[in-house]
Image (cartoon, rainbow, N blue to C red; front, top):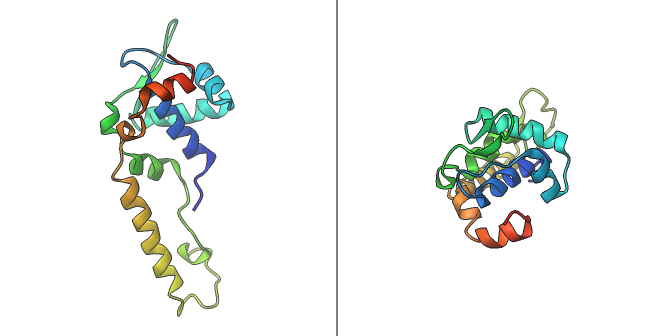
Length: 145
């Protein structure tokens, strides 16, 4: 399974914000520069993360973004579920488009479903705090020390 860039960028934004001091604000431009990715993509990502109540946006002069929750309260499995739009690993996972001839007798679907559940069980065991245990090294690499 491969995560979309959207989910990747969402996780990167959260990691970036978690490396900052609690009350320090960041902005899309600095995050885009740190990761060398498009500001336009990050604008969409931060908007959605705000709707999920994991970041807060402060508007106006001197505004920016920051985490809305403690990193230990932001579950990675939750973020991935909310930012990915398709977990249909194979055609038969989607009853609307399934045209596979062997689908009624195939056991692969069950195996892949169990694998997907295991994937989420692992992600559900981690929070943003777990991803930034090496906070000072991450901050140095992101040039936000």
